Length: 133
Image (cartoon, rainbow, N blue to C red; front, side, top):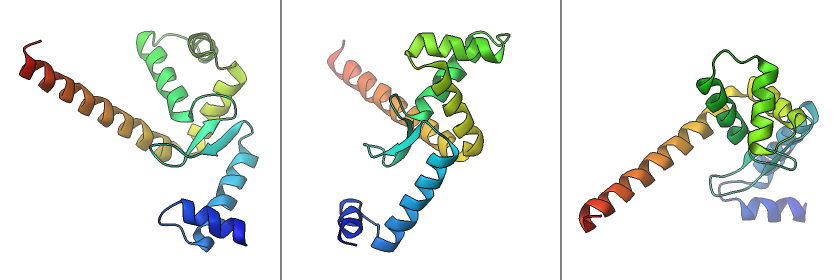
């Protein structure tokens, strides 16, 4: 139980019982989606590929490829994302499967990333406006 208490202590807002529930849920998701793991980061705990980017990053790349060429087949999109990111096609498939099961979670991460990018662009623009650059 001391490892669980320590884990909860490193994650603000988690009690040992809520940490246990979180870890069980993540374990069940990893069992259902081989190749997907969970990790901590600046935006909190999130799904990622075992040896690759976060799931939301793969989904963003898929959307970019799909937007640039809506006529591509699914396998062509997967191949293009794999070539673009270096993520194996099987891992791209794992990200798609995870997204299909938890779209609200991944969409929220995509929206948060978009908001952060917009905020940084606005800050850069204000700096350039102030300095006359």
